[in-house]
Each structure stands twice: as structure tokens, then as C-alpha cells.
Length: 386
Image (cartoon, rainbow, N blue to C red; front, side, top):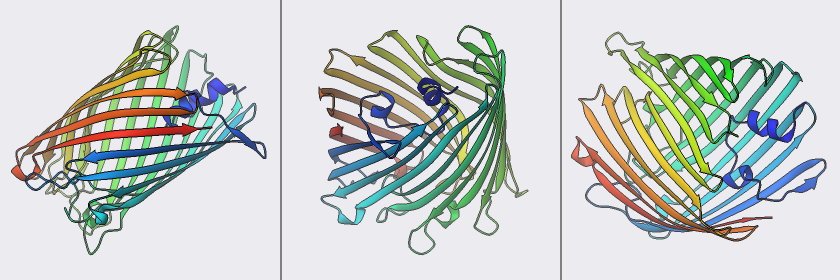
């Protein structure tokens, strides 16, 4: 009832590593489970890893990222457990050294041809060096989440209904009261109706509701978010695949002294494959995000364009460009324009080894002079699998 293809299609709550999605790594059977280890080792030079405008902090950074994936499936269910560690050593700034850890458990259960249940539990303990609240200290946070979703309707049926609920808990581990204004709990609900138009294309209607509860007493950011969207989605197996959603959203704050905001909203994630070896992608969105740097909310309008092309069985290139307009609302009209460029060359020496050489550049122009910066990162990465 659930074959391997359907299982990977349904289990999209949390993306798998790129290598796992491409089916390259080999697994080892352990007690009825498929165990798949991968390892990425990288050396990079970051000329402004704290994104300071006038006195940049640069460093060589060594990254070691092992990932361990344990999965199994039956005719009616599939299970995955994934653990990843990312150790980053800053050669010139030891105070920025950190180890990120991520643990994810997820499953798909098919009761019959019309009824399916999926769930996910996640835990992430990490640190950020970019755009931190305090330039001399990493943003240290822990994120926990639990999600459950239910789908009614056969995969080939004319109509399907998806409903889901998710809880997230964000906490910071910084010294003193640093970042305590960002700690909050989020409860979200999504309901989507899909209607097949024919072939691989379906129309959709979606409703969303989120409740943001901040721990800080009398926080002005306590709010609810609501959105209604319509759109189209197309199967991943098609030459043109992905989804487009457009609609309207509103963010209402609990504090009567804080302005509410409403705006058109959209999301687009589309891949076009004119050839099997060449993929063009677009990822665009317009949405309200949670507040930062004193803002009650951040209105994010961004577009990312990408192109991945395989030139030979051993060599591929990956390029992207992203533009984001970030409006910080409720903080005096701050507006950031962020341009991001990136390119990499990937050499697949063997089935189990891949080497990539890449470059990324960030240029942020802000109304605030202390938030304007440029950042360049040069990367050499080796990915190893069984």
C-alpha cells in the first residue's frame, strides 16, 4: 500500500539530506532497519561572520558534519530517525566555536487507501554568529517541535483533505537577559483541500492559523496570524513541478497599543527541468515573520532563483541569486534590502565521494548604518557516504 516512492513523497515534513534524496548513499541493515551514515567535511573562509558594518571579524572555519539516518518501512507504514551534528571551529575566534545538534523522528501510517497519518518530533540545539543580538556572543538557542497531520483521500482521488497541527518551543541559552525577548511558544493549524484538475495538476484552498505566545511578561509581540490562500500544485515527477499559493494574511497583536498588519501573501516553489540533467528553480514568498531587533514583526518579501546543471557524469554546477526586502515594522521604519549570490562546482569523484568548491556573497543595504554590511564566504566541502 505504501511503496518506497509513495513513502518518500508523503514524508516531506522535514527534508532529507540531498544525498539521501538522490539515492546515492548505501545503507547497512541493522536489526531490520536501514542505517545510512554520511559525512561532510568543509573548510571555509568567512570575511565577516558576525556581519559587522565597520570592523568585520573574519576567520577560517572548519566544519565537520556527520549524519546518521535509521529507517524502515512495511506495506502500510514508514519510520525515520535522523541525528546530525555540525561542529564548527573558528581558527581566529575561539569564542565563536560551537557544535549544533539536530534530532528528528518522523513517520507515515496508512490505515487504508483513503486515510493516512503522519507525525514528526524534532529537537535542535544550535548557535548563530550572523546578525546576533550581541556582536561578542553567539545567539544560542534550542528549538523543539511536534507535528501531526492527517490526510483523507486516495492518492489518485479527485479530492483530498489535509489537516495538521504543530507546536514549537523556542528558548535561548545566552548570558543574562540577552535574547529573552525572543523566547516564545507557537501553535499552528493548517487545513488544505486539494482538487485534481487532471493529470498531475491539482488546485488547492488553504487556511492557516498561528498563535504566538511570548514568555516575556507584557511582550508587545504576543499575536495571532491568519491566512487564506488558493493555488496550484504539480507532481514532482513532472517536467514542471512544485506549488504556487496566493492569498491574504493578517497579524493581530494582543496589545491594543500595537498596530495590527495585513497584506497580500504568496508562496511559490517551482522546479523546471527542460532536460533530466538541468533544473531551474524559483522560490518566492511574501509573509509576516516574528519580530527582531526591536521590531514587532518583519515583513519578508523575497525571491530566490537557482540553476543546477550536470555537465558530465562527474561534474555539475549550482548557482543561485536571492533578493529580499525586509521591512521591520513598529521600530521606526527600518527597511533592509538583502542581495545574496552563490555558485559552486561539484565533482563526483566516485559514487561515495563528492567534492564541491563554492562562493557566496551577502550585501545588505539598510536604513540603519549599523545594519549595512557585506559578507563573502569561500567554501571547500567533501561529502562521503558508504
